[in-house]
Length: 121
Image (cartoon, rainbow, N blue to C red; front, side):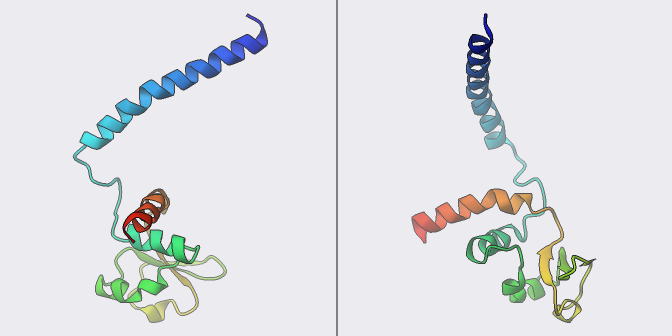
């Protein structure tokens, strides 16, 4: 095989592999009893903040944050200093309130929130 034919064969092989792998991974994920892979308390608020404000600051959800007693909330100051834990909004007057847990879950759920709002919103 010359180089071009080999590349086309490899590209086709990868596509077939992905088509075979995807249903298996999807089925395992669908049947898994694990609901989330992390703490999801702030996932939807963070996704909404990303959609509406374009940032991960949860300050617009201050009432819910206070009701949950600042669970998993950290303060990130403008110069990127992180303070955790905080016990009141006064602990973070100038900074952004962020989820202490990784943001990847919120980033992954944002398209679902957008789709939900598009369909039912």
